[in-house]
Length: 130
Image (cartoon, rainbow, N blue to C red; front, side, top):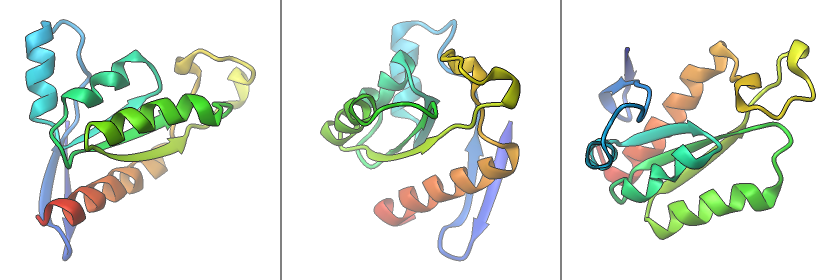
C-alpha cells in the first residue's frame, strides 16, 4: 500500500509499505534495503537488515512492552555503526494476549501508526535535506 505525507517542511513524500523479505533471495533483500529510506520493523532478526540501509536512512524499532534496555541497545548500536538514524517505540499488548512474548501478540494502535511514520519521515527529511 502507499501512504502520502504532506508537510511544508518536507514537500510531499510517498511511502510504500511492504512485507519484507520473505521469498526474496539474499541479493534481492540487500537491493531492497539499499533502496529503502525508512525501515520499520519489530524486534527480531529481520531488523538486522539495518546493515544494508544507506547512511542517513531511518530505522524504527518496534519493541515488545517488556523489552529490556540491553536488548534494545544492540539494535541501536548496529544502526549507529551503519550510520542509520534510529528511533524506537514500545508496542501495546492486546488485553487478551497479556503475558505472551510472541511478537504476534503485540500491536501498535492503528491511530498511532501515521504519527510514527510521519515522525520517521521528518527525521529522514531533516537529516537528508529533502
